[in-house]
Amino acid sequence: MLSQSEENYLKIIFSLQFEENKLVSTNDIAQKTKTKASSVTDMLKKLSDKKLVNYKKYRGVKLTKLGEFNAKKVIRSHRLWECFMVDKLGFAWNEVHETAEQLEHVKSDELIDRLDEFLGKPKFDPHGDPIPDKEGNIAKSNTFMLSELEIGHFGILEGLKNSSDDFLKYLNNKKLALGDKIKVKNIELFDNSVLIKTKNYEFTISSEVAQNLLVKII
Amino acid sequence: MLSQSEENYLKIIFSLQFEENKLVSTNDIAQKTKTKASSVTDMLKKLSDKKLVNYKKYRGVKLTKLGEFNAKKVIRSHRLWECFMVDKLGFAWNEVHETAEQLEHVKSDELIDRLDEFLGKPKFDPHGDPIPDKEGNIAKSNTFMLSELEIGHFGILEGLKNSSDDFLKYLNNKKLALGDKIKVKNIELFDNSVLIKTKNYEFTISSEVAQNLLVKII
DNA sequence: ATATATTTTTAGATATATCTAAATTTTTAT
DNA sequence: ATAAAAATTTAGATATATCTAAAAATATAT
Ligand SMILES: [Mn+2]
Ligand SMILES: [Mn+2]
Ligand SMILES: [Mn+2]
Ligand SMILES: [Mn+2]
Image 1 (spheres, rainbow over the protein chains, first blue to last red):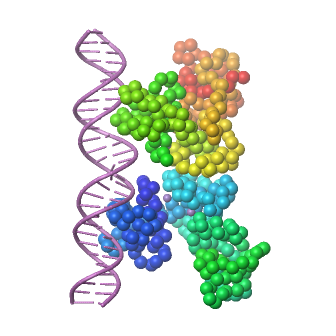
Image 2: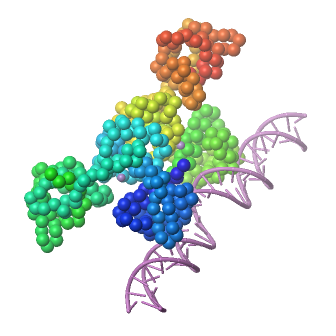
Image 3: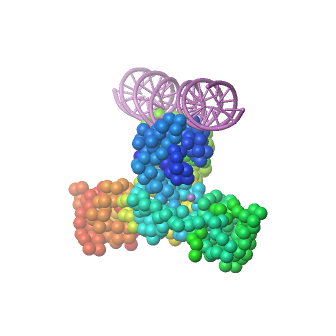
């Protein structure tokens, strides 16, 4: 049985090993877990003993099949609980992450599978992130950063590259939600800021914002 | 912020101090928490430092107002999660306790209050135990042990004095559920076993079973 | 190629929650 | 009122997860 701490490390290593295509470094893990490098080293030894990661001293780690499966189980649980809180309990999408960080560690496969069923087997969480199925399969979506669209083109907002509270609140203020149709009306050459048009509003977003909005091109 | 372990001790002290009307003993707590008396002593010191219990060395403990309020918060959470699992996810009443032991420790008052709302503010959990409200008020039910009824009298099954898996499975086998109307048809003088009649069945239960069935007299 | 900087690991502490064994206090029985 | 029994606490360990500071390995820059 994995501890909460072990599960958190697996989840973080999982996300880091997809960002870059090399072994995940001790420092990167320390930064994400908000711990020190020395603590990470200790944990990597433990995860390695449990056959959850392949760890090469000074070189970095990657998840084994077993580690990856367990990481995906935790991610599945986290995202399903977020769906529950938003869809059934009426929380806003920026209010659910911290609580899901706790709920994700409840150990009961049956609970998660029934929750999945109860929610109608959703494929994406409230932030547009895909929910792994029971076997660990993840739907991969075919989205682009809004910053990649050309002037005059349209996209449907389907996900976020960053789901921080600050960004979610920014989107709330701008009345931007998943599913919204967005038109690129202009791109400023100087700073790559983007003038967009949504159902009711027209406004400019920074290049950074545009890079964090994932859209399906239509 | 209370640890899971601290919360479990509070819950157990709460239930023990209602069973008997004296200070709760170290050994009784040790038995319920499945730890050793020495571990309990350590924890009692900690809870005392946090003003959650009044602890007199060698004499026993009782909860302070603060301790009692926190105990009731955990019990509320536990029982609401049990309602959720049974009413919304379709679990049987004997399948939810262990998972609720984990869920009860998730720290979010907002989550519990919204869950309460979502479930329709239930007053009792799937085992007939009362659910404290947000302020810590507990509906006290006016029930009797089935063993107290006289021959020929009727009762509605409203609760259980014991909710162990074994007992719940026994009741499943006998097709006895909360809300059932039960008639006492005979009481055996020799062993106080009780012949009862439910909607469709007539059978004998032991004195011990009769003492663990809580009924409203009609 | 070597010195310097950066990263990672090791060594040794701290905090929580548990244990066993020994000491102490309280209770019970004669 | 004492002695024996039972309950409780203390002392000292162990396991997990973290930390700081020092040592070791790797990467970078001249
Ligand atoms: Mn999240
Ligand atoms: Mn977590
Ligand atoms: Mn329960
Ligand atoms: Mn618990």
